[in-house]
Image 1 (spheres, rainbow, N blue to C red):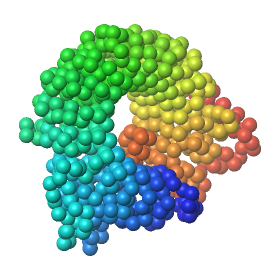
Image 2: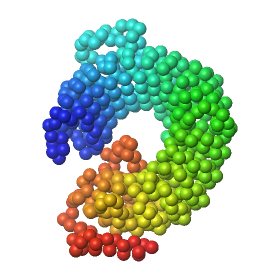
Image 3: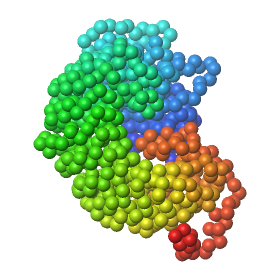
Image 4: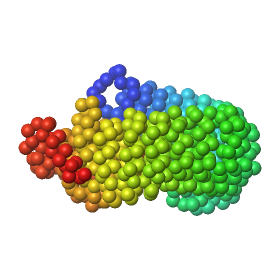
Length: 584
């Protein structure tokens, strides 16, 4: 199929492909010499030949993004050796790169030579995103020692290491790394050797408590001030698998950083367990250009941080206070003084309730609002529905007090015209009636999540299948639907995902109780991505290849026969109406 979609075309300059169902046989169609931008996601079925061919053929690339998964190499091609060689070919061949994003497992490379390969990177590079790599490799890659460009790194190496004041990344402005741990030495090397850095994004995922020698302390935080041009800073310690924090950083380090980095425009901090309100207030009052503030799992953050935010010159547009357990409506009321807020993420703020939502509803520029696990009720949704916030994305996941009445109030106003992405997952009192209300409102839903709702059943799916919008067919605008573990979903609901229904749907999450029936979708829906083991549907990454359901075709199924027996579209609509009435 790919050769029909990508015939020779000298005018093609940019290509973005989800490669979950592709492999090495597709490389010739993807590595086009005329390309200047190439983005390949979910490359789990490729070998290192992908790197070799891109390096050989795509000499004009300015931007390259690869999500690599790696198949096992043949026995005559040692895994780490061939991956290093492929990366070397890529960096040598793509000598005009300005942006490079590589997502991979660093263990698939030979660490003894991995850092040396990066001395071949194009001096034009301005953006570099790497992950997952070891902190020791990161220090070697970004230190001030560089190599002469001649020779090959493998076999008889001719690379000679020399101490110079210059760096291998003379024009780098944005650096994003996922590491095993963030340490003082890593931050120090980066701050010292990347003088033009504008954006620094470091995230680590330690599996055990780091020793003092390999952890981040106040000293490391202070080194960031060496990056005089820095405008965007993100330091996050992931706690998804292990509850490990930055225990060696306290208020002193953050206060000194805020003093010396007052030009910051965005700050993202996560996993700092010893930082108190004093640090956050210093950031708000000294970083006068701040527009984006993201704080994750800040256990000592309280309402006092925001009580006088109206006295600052800040014009915040993006505020995230994720899992900040001490934040209440008081903070939200004061944050509402920032009338330019477009993104407000309050996931895990369990003390935020209806009073906070009342003021949020007045934010005339708000596009995204996440209220996962908050204490809001149907009253709060009525404030939102009657307000003037032009929301495009709303998450109400795990808001246990909500009922169908709240959804009715939500769609009673102008939100019907703007809202496209809605998450109603894990709401125990939500029923099919709420989905019927959504459908009848005419809302142009693009992404809808209803996972783990015990009272959502087949009627909801049938109602969604009936949606029309500007002649786009049954199921209208829906591109993502997650009904994983919704209590009332049966084989009947699965049958409604056949054509002509949900013609634009590309992502579907279902429960394991019906996964045996999804083969009926195979003939007409080969591009529909189906997950049935509970993984989240995330269009940002789209990495579902491990769970992609391999469909088997049937000769004919009951739904096809039923559709063939109906004479015209009017009869189809009449039949759908009967199903909905029965559900009501």
